Image 1: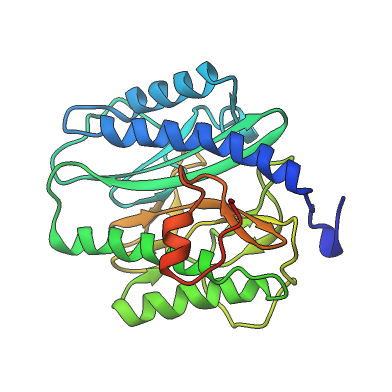
Image 2: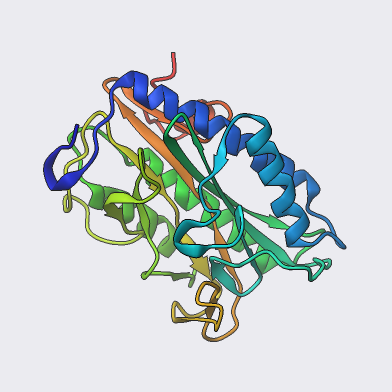
Length: 271
């Protein structure tokens, strides 16, 4: 069923089906993380993720999406999002954002991690830490009766307290379910108490993207790869989250988000 503003609302059983789709993506990303090392190419990581998704009965939802040519988005260093996996080997000190999604039984999942390649500069390691933590702060702000703006406000408030990071504005989180991208948009900045109301049955992909410099960016000639205008490095983390009557389940986290939700004082609905 659809609620106000065309937002798709799922039953608890449907959210659990999304969690099964999310488990496939979680496994693919765990294997991808383990595979990241100097000398490996993004195309090899892409092939690994596609194999895992298909072996588990899923279908890669990025592959062919508006013509996208791969299973994952592989965004290296100054690439913010939508990097096309290629044959240039990763080198020590790089970072790679791996964004991955799957369809299982008609339900989509979507998640992203940014992984250091060997040892990285301290400021880059801190960028990754702040980006991932800001995602969890946004997830913990999801509450029935709250507003979507609460999520972006929580992300922005945390990031501003950690340093002079750029919060990318053009690319935002989104609803997810029977399609990869659905209403509502979930910006990574904004005012609390604004935007669509959060209700049970919603599923949201929350995905902050931060840079070490400007938030300005441009798209390369391949019409996909988005890079920072000043060449500063970027990081991207994402989880899909389901809203149940008694709390949240992080649909793409191996433990449903239990540990992180508890740390941040948010209700976990996985039991």
